[in-house]
Length: 456
Ligand SMILES: Nc1ncnc2c1ncn2[C@@H]1O[C@H](COP(=O)(O)OP(=O)(O)OP(=O)(O)O)[C@@H](O)[C@H]1O
Ligand SMILES: [Mg+2]
Image 1 (tube, rainbow, N blue to C red):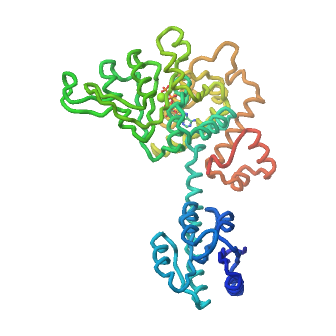
Image 2: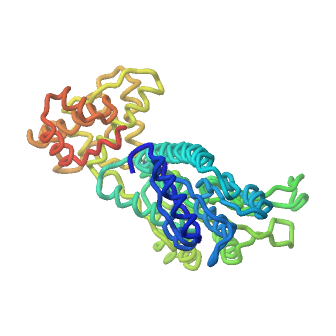
Image 3: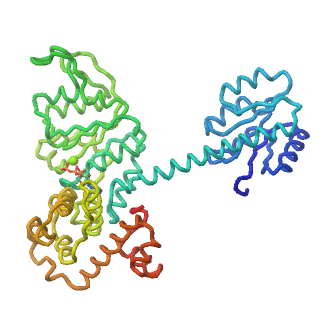
């Protein structure tokens, strides 16, 4: 089919009628596919169908009304034009109420049918264009734009997130401080079936023990001194959405029993009440502690551990994914430059070795902090980094003893990356600026795991 051609699926059990209508539409430039019954047509239709459907109402096997209902379960935006015999008009009116595009009484003027088909095709084209725009927009705000990183570890993590996002399985996110556990939790919500529902985070480490139960399960008025009104807890508040229990390892043991009960029974009891309220939530938890060790020392309940850990996602520390360091640094520099209205500054190669060699005990948060200070501070970056970064571990390289080859590799990557950021992923512009042939640029980008999509 050429672009702009009107595509029609024609369904009619009457062979003469079908052939004559198909011929007329084809002569008028439509791309027609004919079907003798609705089930065969249905099998060929999906939401990617870019045309319209013209269908008879009275047909054996499946009538036009059932066809319409089934088709609209697939995609209610496909225009359906119904052909009605004399006396079927009431049925056609009902069909219009169900969303049919239009109906025509037989016998009809072919020009009239053609006119309706053309208008319906135009409508379909607009709907498809709209879908395409939305799809692209979703791509732009995709998971790569939230959980930044090109290392194989982060690529795998993104895939794991998307694999489980649509399920209701409880997820336990493990990782050192600042690695991005909260980012992962938000991705699970944003790309999951409950994205329209709430995302309710609770930092278990920050809730005072005496109000923990009421914070999670709520309380009735007068349940305890100071409870002057009823309050719903975080579980109930997250109804239909996602509850994120951050630092779950810090939860007091008596509360752990109650949380386990709530998860098993899928209901909560407010403090001061006897009545259980059903809750429908997806639980995501995070911990920077090793919960199995906590189980063995008796500070975390094993039964709760297995209940919250149906899926386990591990966020690797930054020192295990060195190739993400510069990418993240440049990303945070760009963000900070925009936020503080400062020019973007590039990193002298002498500092790259230091950055690559640093242990990053505070992980991505520490890196983000350094990037922000780098943009804001007037102190040369070398001095800033030397004072901010802790001394490298024994035998480690720094800018003085890093091999020239290594420094050149880091520097090359940095230059490529900055050019990609400057040109928003426009490879042609990067080629021109750096005066590189396309093949060389492609090879270098692939060697450094740089993907232009991340800079669009
Ligand atoms: N891969 C990433 N891409 C973009 N930003 C990230 C990434 N990882 C972490 N960040 C950013 O780094 C900071 C720390 O991340 P986050 O709060 O998710 O870490 P955390 O593991 O929950 O830390 P903590 O253990 O201290 O709670 C945040 O500002 C977050 O937006
Ligand atoms: Mg966190």
